Image (tube, rainbow, N blue to C red; front, side):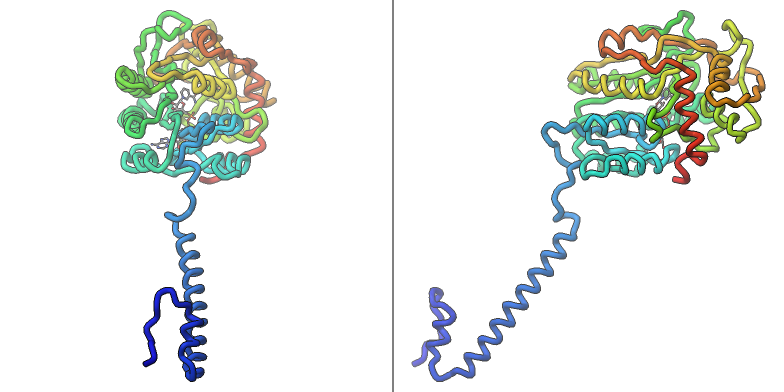
Length: 412
Ligand SMILES: NC(=O)c1ccc[n+]([C@@H]2O[C@H](COP(=O)([O-])OP(=O)(O)OC[C@H]3O[C@@H](n4cnc5c(N)ncnc54)[C@H](O)[C@@H]3O)[C@@H](O)[C@H]2O)c1
């Protein structure tokens, strides 16, 4: 009796031999067998292709793992003016950066510049999200491994805040809470917070130190102060390293001309002095409107402490490096020198070479007469001092960028 059963150890070739006299059947089987092998190989190749293309198969994103020796910083508002400059500096210093921005005020063009400068995988990623969307923010934290957060994202115009206070409390105070909650949940260790001298209001004594009482007088300053209070209360029972940086008036742009300040045209009326000067110099506006000439200052116009953005981002990197677990550092970031609006306008005229027409108008609600910092603490503790203190030069650098990019970064 022919044994058709196959022992497990019996090789296939030997099996076919055992069917002596049945060559025809054997050939057919052989053909079937080769066909099956081909089919199997084709299917396997197809499966590999399909699986490889599915997102779950790809090797984990470098942003989703902690890599020894690499510090991954989440930069909120990184498409904006200061956030984009900070990102450039962080990337230059070999940090890994994730930008989260809703582009409500920032520019995708700035992100593209950064991506073109640092195209290597694992250096920079951009995530389009509104920080008010707590679910999305939670998802971002769950999918990425951040070592630190620099929280720049905010609406940031004093005048606008007096018109739309709720927008400011929501965007600044409530969104900071959302970010902080996610940081706590996912155990992110370091928080660098963008605060402002507007939290001090209008103190009687100048210069402003970090212990000057905070009595903000507009919703912008109040919203930032509330956010600071939340951070401070949280940090009492947390191991998080926290640095709160209270900036004075930020001006200038990247000295190499890669980035600049490009606020939305619709914000022109609430805008900052440098933007207003440039718009007047370029003939976009009729001239420059100086609001308030009867303040109690030497020339009657407001006095501010103008800090160059290059110095400001340097303060952030130093703060990041020196942040200590369970400790809070609060620092003024300014030059320590106040300049009047008239002085600023005169520097702007020189830097642009345009004899800008100036209209003097009544005071603007929410403004204060004189504000300048005492930068002693940040010098002593973080070894930081402003280097770019020539007003005209800072304006010149920013003007060069403005002139070379008449449409800013183009449409977002
Ligand atoms: N520019 C100054 O003179 C100055 C002074 C003191 C403090 N600050 C603070 O510095 C930070 C950055 O200011 P800036 O001048 O670069 O402003 P900016 O408007 O240029 O940048 C802010 C960025 O945050 C983004 N953003 C706003 N709301 C968001 C949201 N809900 N979700 C996600 N992204 C959002 C915007 O799209 C924008 O890209 C702000 O926190 C501001 O309060 C600025």
